[in-house]
Image (tube, helix red, strand yellow):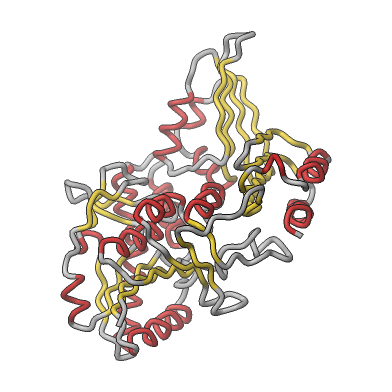
Length: 395
């Protein structure tokens, strides 16, 4: 018998059929006698739907109220999975952050976990029950619901694996593990069988679709090894093992990451209003894909540049963000951000060919470092460009 923490993302739980598949997969492990703690995300699309409903009522809803609203999505999923498992003859209970005692700070929308008291988890496991925990959430010292940021269910799973000394931690998402590029875009991605915490953390910084970067930092700090897999991918059974002591070699690219449909906002103002923008981003749960702030010595003015997704830009426009925009502002749509993540990339033999490829594009910003290369550009066919870049680097 082993103790296992499993996390299932929103795509895995998006409808009754998939919840049934997940429940059957859990039943197989339960029949082996394993102790199971299951962390679930809200069903695909539910969190965004709840956010839209809040914004229909108020252009600036209170952050604490929004967190209380968003927790509903994970409550629902946990309850539905418990119903499915009990219907299959597997004893299961659903628990929320209050019941588990996941205590956080009061930074609504991006709270940090301070302690996990555990609730009745040990008693339930001892009684042979599967414990299903609503991910992505906690409670602050005033017992107010909080959320752990985008992708926060990953952090819930890693933290529970640490708190309850799990033998295994398994993250189930919508791809068959980590790859050299997004398999939903790259034609021939290379599967990564093992990767270190640190290397995956670098990738997560630019691609939160795979893993939340904060969860990766916590896993590295606490030494929590885990796997990433999918129940619904092209190759069920494939997975990536994330562990200590398996770094990539020198002069090595780890992954090609990207974000499409970005909007670049460039603002020139007489005074520094950058902090005001950051506060509005936090209030609206907007995560900038690119951010730069510069004081121009020639004019004494301040230049602020921020790239956000098209969806998040529309959310900003419903807030008081527009009122802060200075007269000198430009907005450019349809941009793509491309990052190459790795180690000592400046010595890579493919660097010249990649820069030549990127030089053919309309580049708005480019940054070069030892650990990553970053391009913010406009491409006629972003997918074709990404595949060409992947071939240069990895094939």
